[in-house]
Picture 1 (cartoon, rainbow over the protein chains, first blue to last red):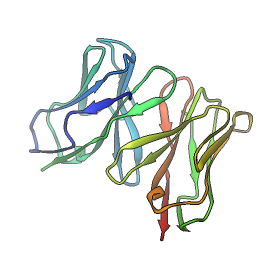
Picture 2 (picture 1 turned 90 degrees about the vertical axis):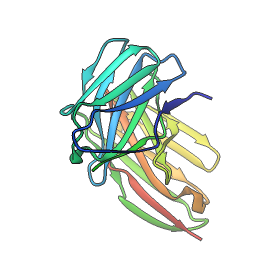
Picture 3 (picture 1 turned 90 degrees about the horizontal axis):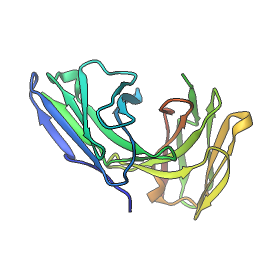
Picture 4 (picture 1 turned 180 degrees about the horizontal axis):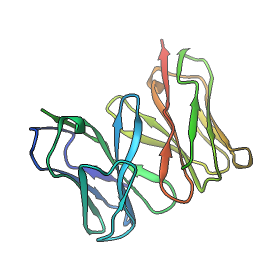
Length: 110
Length: 107
């Protein structure tokens, strides 16, 4: 069964900390994505990548960066976490025929 | 970008009832998927259906691409069907989600 694995299910971090959210897929997909989900706002795209070392901004990239050093791994980085980044973060991968999502990381910034 | 509208926003059903969820989108799409978000937050892919009709057990979906809508049918609903159902479409860029339909199936 194809898989997208997010390293943490729940995470609590302090304001100002540097936070890494990791995502790994085992499907050899070129395309990977990071979304955040908030009540009333739905799912919004933060960053995506169509290839190794390549990244594109999504709809809400401010306060975030990403890293894709290997095809199977796509990391989301919060350089200096803030309380308004408390959210559910969802990673996905795609070969161009449908997206597969990970189980999500609930991040709380205190 | 593409606009995606789902209806109804909320739905309450008695176990055993049937329901139809609708997704309207504003432009041509290369990809349309229906997802079910479980209580733990994971998005489970139900259908990849940019056009045509597919069935999987008690669930089926139809997309009429020329008229820019898709329908998700749930028959003989069960309490485990409760959760949020999302329609998501991809035009020439990335996947855009609707706001979802929250379904509650009561015993």
